[in-house]
Image (cartoon, rainbow, N blue to C red; front, side, top):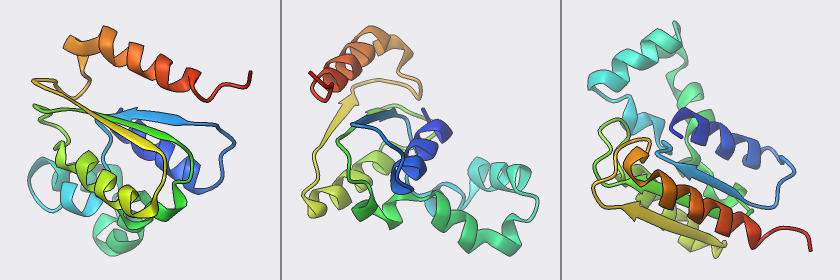
Length: 137
């Protein structure tokens, strides 16, 4: 979830050996997330030199900037009421992925929060089902 989702995207971009990946509540556009409010404050806390290295940090961590490098099947999940990472982050990446003709699915859980805790059983069921499609038989 969240930053972990971003790490998944980076690993896939860099050639991590996997058959498929799933994320929920992942951010895909660090520029948008850090443009103001809590995200801007958070960035300066995590990266002391954020202002000096802003473009480098954002480019490296924003899957929206390199969707063509996400070549494995993806399951992207998000809660419609996520207050930490807007669901638009997942939807914008999905729009970019649709241009690449890659295999991906998007699930937005109505009323779901950042961790989808009130949809945990359904979230996990969908992940398991998704991964089973790509298992070696």
